[in-house]
Amino acid sequence: MTHDELTVEPAGSSDIDSCDCCGNASRTVWGFIRRREEPVAAYYVGWVVGHPDHGARFDLILGQWGDGTSSQDRFAVSLLFRQTGDGAGFMIVDAGSTTAGTSDLVASAFSRDQVVGTPFAQLSFDIVDAIWLQDSRIDEVRNFA
Image 1 (cartoon, one colour):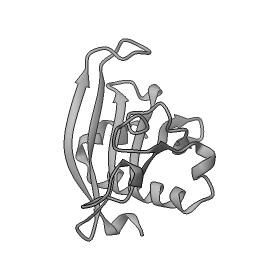
Image 2 (image 1 turned 135 degrees about the vertical axis):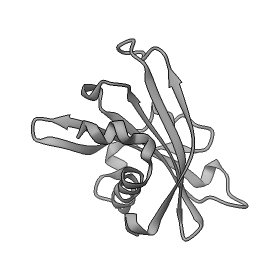
Image 3 (image 1 turned 30 degrees about the vertical axis):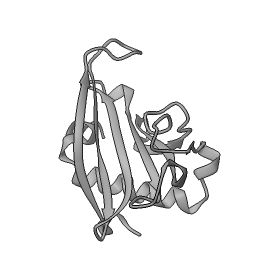
Image 4 (image 1 turned 120 degrees about the vertical axis):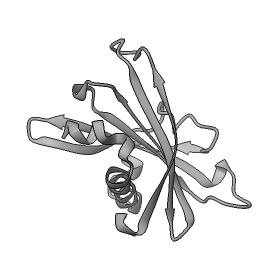
């Protein structure tokens, strides 16, 4: 599966007046990913407004969706988008304490080691690419790069 086979379906957003770490406003947007009309994932993207030094978190809920499925059929994966001296990029991180990882929609939150080097890594990057290219609500994050 590649990002061009995926369709992003924006769903909602939330602004918080005070970020826990710095006190600045933060924003989270979320939605769904489909491949040929079939649900593939849900996603959350969160960042501190106006502060590219904080980066952005891309939390994914992957697994089986649809009739007859439950949280036992899904898991969370998380990636950080950061600006470094070498440019901007994504890194898979532990999903345990993330929005997706603590959601009632998943049975487990994958650690970095459970994702890196597996097919889940490529799937995660394909989904993040689709979000990056299709969800205009993250324009500020794209401008961080």
